[in-house]
Image (cartoon, rainbow, N blue to C red):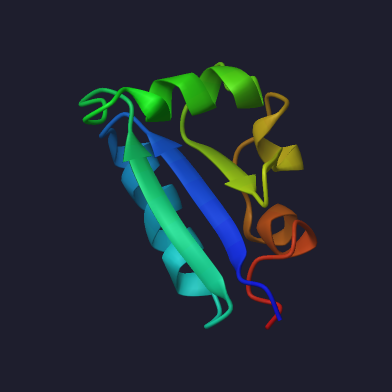
Length: 91
């Protein structure tokens, strides 16, 4: 079974930290969680390019297997239910 790639885009804010904590709490052994701090950037700036490709306009944002989670594509906050619906934690 292929790993589920979960990417969390943050800016080092307290709400971002809570989202990272929630994603890690929900993640199953089949989930590979990657956290990108857009404030600090990356060595090659690829995290900012990814954020643009995914259409991320606010953080925290969660992308599961290349698709922006429903809770992050509108103005509703990240929620446990929406993350589970996106497939996180379903080993």
